[in-house]
Structures are given as C-alpha cells and as structure tokens.
Amino acid sequence: MAQPLLRLYPGRVAEVPLAGAFLGHDLRQLGAPATGFVYTGFITSLDGRVAEPDPITGLRGVPRSIANERDWRLFLELVAQADLLLVSDRLLSAFAKGRYLQLWDLAGPGLDDLVPWRRQQGLPDRPAVAAVSPWLNCSLPAGAAERELLLLAPDEASAHRARSLTGQGGEVLRLGPGPTLTGDAIVDALVDRSHTVICSVAGPQMLHTLVTSGRLGRLYLTQAHCLVGGEDYDSLLKGPRLEVGRAFNLSALYLDSASSPGQIVQVLDSVSPASPSKPQ
Ligand SMILES: NC(=O)c1ccc[n+]([C@@H]2O[C@H](COP(=O)([O-])OP(=O)(O)OC[C@H]3O[C@@H](n4cnc5c(N)ncnc54)[C@H](OP(=O)(O)O)[C@@H]3O)[C@@H](O)[C@H]2O)c1
Image (tube, rainbow, N blue to C red):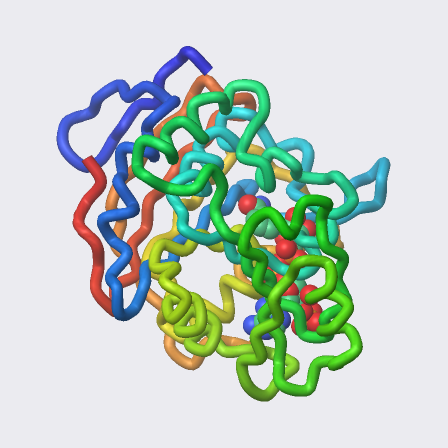
C-alpha cells in the first residue's frame, strides 16, 4: 500500500499516496439536497468481466485474477464517504452469511482510518444501508437493527416477508410497481430520508437502473491489465439496450503500476445531469 498512484490527469503528472486518494475527492460536497449525488465503483478486466462464478466455491463475484487490495482500499474510501450504501438483496444476504464484512463493517486490515475519518466529518460510524429487493427474499445480517436498514421493494412484494424483515430490524419502503424499481423511485426515496450522498455497491443491474434514469453522477472504473476469458460472466451493464448511449466526461485518470496486475483508474462524470467539478 505504500507505493503511490500516478495521477495522469488532470494537471501535471504527479505521485499521489494511495491512502486518502479518493477521500480527497470530497464527494460529500456533491450531495445536492434536492436530488442527491449517486456514485459507484467497479473493477473490470481488459476483456470487460466484472463478475464470474468462482472456480472453487461456485459463488459469483469479482474474478480472483483482478480483485486486489489496492483497488479494494480505494473502493472503501468511496464507501466511507457515503450517507448510505445502495446494495442488492443478493449482497445483503451475502453480508448475512459473513461475506464482504469489511464492506458492512467498514473495518479490516489497512482500513483503521475510515471510521475515524467519518467521525471527523460528524457522520455516524457506518453508512445506512438500502437494499433493492423485488421479492423481499433476503436475509438480514446480525446487528441489522443497530443501523438504518431500508428494504426497497415494489408494491406487490409479500406482506408476510415484509413483516418478518421488519421484525428483524429492517424497514420496508414500497416504491411503486415492480418487479423492477426505477432509479428515480429509488433515489428520490433515499433523498426524502435525507440520504443525499449515495454510494451504490450493487452490480451491473443496478448500474443499468441508475444510468437509465439519469441518476448516476459519477463512475469510478478500475481496469485491471489482465485478460480473464470465460463464457459465464457479467459485464458492466446488465439490462435492455439503452435507446441513447450515455456519455461521460473523464474527470481524473490514475495509473497504479504497484498493483498486481497493473491497473488504471478512471473517474468518469455523467454528462447529464450536472457534472461535478474535477477531483484535485
Ligand atoms: N467488479 C466489480 O467491481 C463489481 C461491483 C459490483 C458487483 N459485482 C458483481 O456483480 C454481480 C452482481 O451484483 P449484485 O447481484 O450485487 O447486483 P445487481 O446485478 O445490480 O443486482 C442483482 C439483484 O438486485 C435486484 N435488482 C437490481 N436492480 C433492481 C431494480 N432496479 N429493481 C428491483 N430489483 C433490482 C435484482 O433482482 P431481480 O434479478 O429479481 O430483478 C437482483 O436480486 C455479483 O457477482 C457481484 O460480485 C462486481
């Protein structure tokens, strides 16, 4: 972790310490009270894979050949800045099974500064969590009642399941007809609850939802310099073809040659609605 990133853009090429590189982007300044600010981070292989079944466990996740601790650190700096994490019901259930706990707890080796950073900003130790759940067929992690945990469901989702999850500490919000919820319904409901800085840590389906509604403000995209191959995989976006391609402006570009494999990180701001100012 000691080796710096090389910032290639904007400005002159400069070494930037890895720890703090994304905390310095000051995402909390971008959370407009009326519309909120939604951002997300992905890592992809050279051939565009973001997820595949693990060859040993069979569980779907980021390909092992590209997942790395330097990208993870940067990703958790994005998480640390949020009022709320937007997750899929699948990821919430993975938390319940003890997977991805660093994401749920915001703690782990090399991450000791993140909760203190939040306290300095006057934030609760951990962000609230909202899970999209078309059928309310998810499990809640232990300790769910200790933080705000919203379950975003369509109107027709089972009342029985809703009662069960409420009894375990979740709060069900019904956001219109389903099974697929719109990005506007999701983000407006979160902003109504005063969560204006929203980090999506869900996958390609949620990215499609947010992009289609024009509610994604910024995409952090790490491209690991590695080919993965395989025939069963997820790529960045999953959902119907976009009628009009969504454009982004490059806001910053980093080379991380200390990771294995090497990788570049692009910070991409949605062209519409408003583009935030360049990270320093
Ligand atoms: N490489 C990376 O950086 C990266 C980042 C994130 C995730 N991933 C990987 O991508 C894979 C998929 O991620 P994921 O399952 O967390 O997220 P996802 O593909 O975005 O979402 C899948 C789940 O969320 C529900 N969902 C998504 N959008 C919805 C909407 N608009 N309305 C209602 N329900 C919605 C889906 O329900 P239905 O299917 O029932 O519609 C499904 O249960 C995982 O293997 C994960 O590890 C990789």
